[in-house]
Length: 184
Image (tube, rainbow, N blue to C red; front, side, top):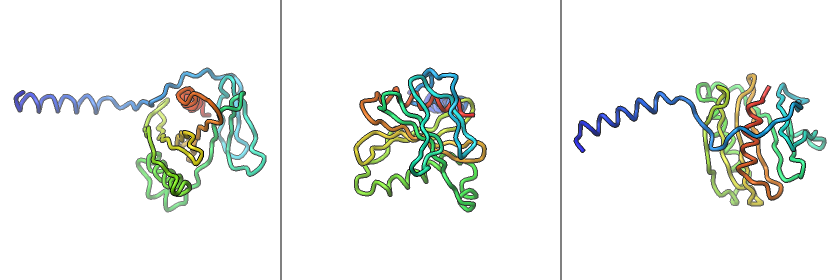
């Protein structure tokens, strides 16, 4: 192939990539939702409850903002508020979600210590024009955990998907993405 053709192909590929501004997730977002809404009692976040799931109040430590559990107790979806100091807020202007996700990953790595096995299936995607950053890792019990970081009404959150049993991970992550479409 001639140099001119190679350069032309590179330019064409560059144009096509720059025009495709939509970022897609590894997982769909078409899990059926009910008409029932779960409301956080501590923040201004609310979501539709997926079919076969219910909302639970965190009575022990008030650690989560919103907590959803699958009816058979095989999986949980937990919303947590990410607290950020003013100095960090100044530093992250621009790619906020990606940078907060990076900080979040540092905390995960520190928490797991020597049992940390790395991150995988990292992604940046959009749903309904809102940007999300996701990553997966294995916890101390070697369960896959998928965390999605996002911003809602000037606050940052993480939505962690945890398997408590034999849940099909792709189905759980599809449910997780679908809930993100209903954030209100």
